[in-house]
Length: 196
Image (tube, rainbow, N blue to C red; front, side, top):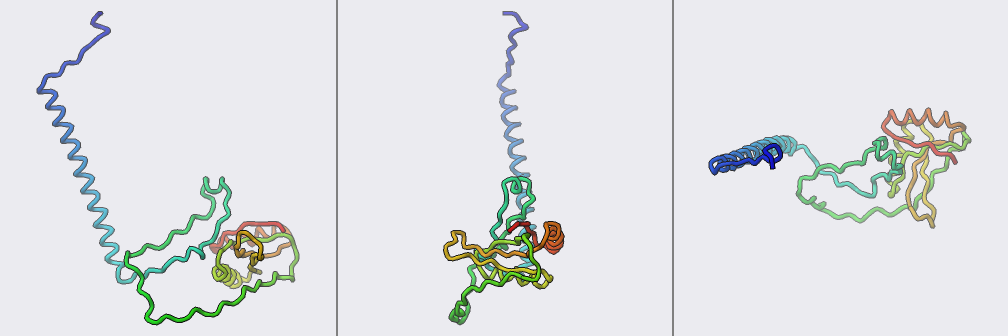
């Protein structure tokens, strides 16, 4: 063998100890910096929660009232669909039960609002699909305040999905439906155009 093909690195015992101690010092410094940053983040979060502790109210989130989104896989990847709602933060304390328990109000049978008949057409806007009727009625009331012909499609008895769909329309042309869709999106109500 020639010297060009093989080179051996020889370290003395002092050099090995120096490398080991240097590696330990670097690791300890990185650990201490991480602890310092973690304390700053935690103390900032503690001061923020302490400042809002007196004014924050915890509202329980009803998962049945959350809208069911019908997004395509492409929309999920590109993020063009509506973001999933996040529940409000909780304080960790269990909610206190009310002092008096009242019986629930009598259940009223769901009544389907009639579709508007003044305008005929095949184009609709679907605002959302909800598993609870009160959530769908709330969205419909908001649409009515915007002077939009909104109605709720009640699921049929044999329907497997049991969703209350909030729709707007009908419109004679897709262009008419698109104009209303743009207006609703400016109001914070994303809609999807559908044909009958």
